[in-house]
Length: 326
Ligand code: DGL
Image 1: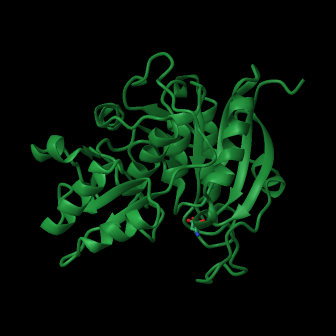
Image 2: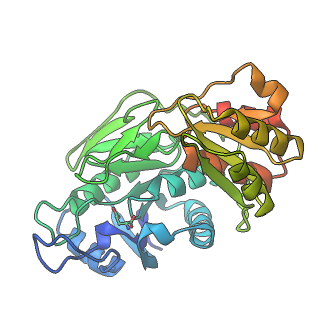
């Protein structure tokens, strides 16, 4: 018997990174193992028992379906344990939003699953990792965290997976929520939710299959030729996400190449290359067979399109409904 506890799944990133100097610029992510992390946090007098498992010691640029598969399986089995209050995943910040969103869409649990990272390595002056971690423990141990989907905790903010995105490359306040800002505020001694859980009961869950279909993001640029679309389709893409101008726009020849792709059964999602880009449906979307990404940026639109395809959902109306869901 382990008693009531929180599981810590460690993957590496800057939260486990070391520079070897408090002021050094260069550092290596994923240097500190989960045991060392837990020994370090033992002195913080946190409100729960913690059990750690090391899944990887890598920068999150190298995280993808293979590690997602392991994390997904572990989250499913941990969340089925009565004594497990919640799960914290330590993660590099670069792709944290994709892992958070993937788990959010696929985990069949209402228990809290929290991603946490750091912008400064553990031995840097002003390191943010321990504070972020202590905050994540507070969130995972909170009964009101249940039913809010997968969350990401950074710089005293709590974000929902669907909203969160890395918006800055430097500084501890690197994440933003869009279209909602943070859904709560947390410090090691306080926790405030900005409203009630927005999900009630079990949400519709997509199955996670490790073999995710190939979906390519096409980043729009001035003078982009339609040939970019054709090349992506020739390379075997099963779906395309346009990181378009403004509200998901692209040069005329790209739009017609995308419509051609959609006609041949390669679904096309229009997202925006603008950081806070909301892409609504437009009149031509029905005729072109396009799907509007709404508030999802290109990386998360790609993950959702992969999941839909892997779950055999290819009807544009059903796909659009998944993008419309909050
Ligand atoms: N390569 C980065 C990553 O693991 C390190 C940066 C970070 O964790 O913030 O995502």
